[in-house]
Amino acid sequence: MNSKDAKRIFLVFGAATAAIGYIFSITTGSIGIMIFLLAWLINYKSITFNKLTKKNKLWPLVLFFLFLILGSFHGGDFYKSQKILVRFIPFLLFPILFITAPIFSSKERLRIIKVFVHSLTIFFIICLIVAISRQIGFWNRGGIFNWYYFYRYDFLEVFKQHPTYLSMFTLLSLSFVLFLKKDLFGKRFLLITTLLIQMTAIIFYGSRIGYILFLFLLVIYFFRNFRTKNGYKKFRSAAIFISSFILMVFLVYKIPIVKERIFYTFGLSYDYKFNNIESINEGGIPEEHGRFLLWKDAVSLIKERPFFGLGTGATEKALLKKYKEMGHILFLDNKYNVHNSYLQTLLMGGIFLLAVYLLIMHNLLWSSLSRKDVSLFMFFLIIAITSITETIFVSRGVQFLSFFYCFFLMREHE
Image (tube, rainbow, N blue to C red; front, side):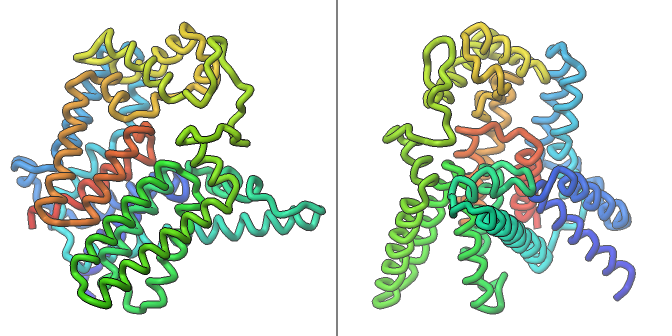
């Protein structure tokens, strides 16, 4: 192996570590970015900066970052705006790295995907081992098996992660496994094992938006395969899908906390032990209406500055002030964000920043349909749908969106 090949392998390794992002911790996310940047610098002889002057679908990420810089001047809180700009550096960095570096070949892309997929599997196995060992200790102290002890908050406690973001990562991984299985797995046993582990992970992580996206993924996979099969194979495919769906519903119904979260989501029952029903704010509004109240508070602020927003770094202070004014003590005490990425962009930068974010969504959707790339379409659904109920502009979400946006769309320029 010559020096050029070794540098190229290191670049692929750098991209793979950046793809893992914040799966394990904030530290691993930062280290991943630094390794990718270092690998890019080591490959300086193959970097072509003249590509930066050409039209490219990666530029909306940079444009989003530039709008945030402009927003920091009228936000008024330079300390907060500086922290937000640092968080959004991947929106600037990844497009530059992907555009100027030599485009990854199909084999190199598969290596990056393999590292990403296997990392999600390892993550869940570690969480499961820790949860089981903790439960065994609970048994030894005379306790009984307790889903509430085993399942949600304690299950991800070892890495201090949020269920929604882990579900986003895992769902993208599952889409790779389902739609690139022949390229990713040489042995069927490894394919089946990975599928079972990661599907179980989606159920155990307990993200309600994750359940909805998981159902979308299963339906897409079923119809895509159903159309290509004939006779007995078509019947078998339908039987497997229906059986899998029934099994999933059965498991969800049998695990108390999962059932309670789903019933809670659809308003069928508010007997949810992780929801403090007695916690009612001064206005007498129960917590189950929380997101609608959050959005209502945000909309009232957006109306004050619809075109340019409140400015980068000014949204948190304005929201807390609004919560106090409206008597939403639960939101105030927990310093809730808007839990909606579209409203968050309007708050930060008005309709102009929202337009850039929608352009990013448009590029993902158009590219997935024009290239008939199912994994890319699933990535679009993950971002677009999760943005309705979560503010994905935290460190995990920023790196996840920016890296895979660049990773998917740079193929068009091969």
